Image 1 (cartoon, rainbow, N blue to C red):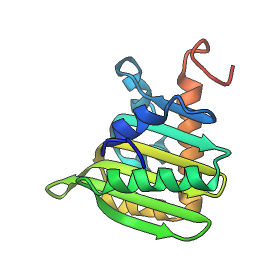
Image 2: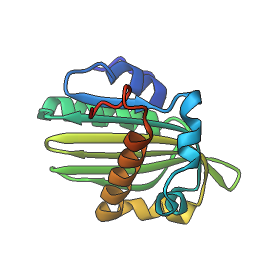
Image 3: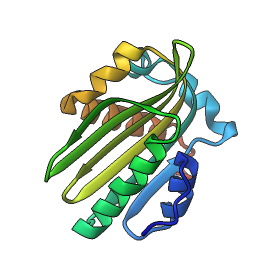
Length: 162
């Protein structure tokens, strides 16, 4: 039913050109932007060395289920769920990859009836802070702050909002 490999990079690459998608990953020359992240966001997530974001808007039921199935394949490949909520109108997944007792990879996935958002973060993270994203308000605030910070630090010629 899907041709996505079982990594977030494969998921991202397979969908970044889909209609209705907003997507970005932070290239190496933009890593300095991540070091200037707001204190609130930095406190919530720690140090980021890699960051990918993809948002699907105006999706139908079939597309939504397909995305959830693909993300399940990704999170079943070396990740541990910190939080998972599945109901008819909302699916939320927070899944982490660990090296020893250190959280090094985080996937945050949220899917509603009309929109699906996924983040991939790589770095060194506080596990307790990552668990806080199970709260919908915390997740939404994080999403808005991180996107605003990223867009504000883009060169205007790169900024999709300009």
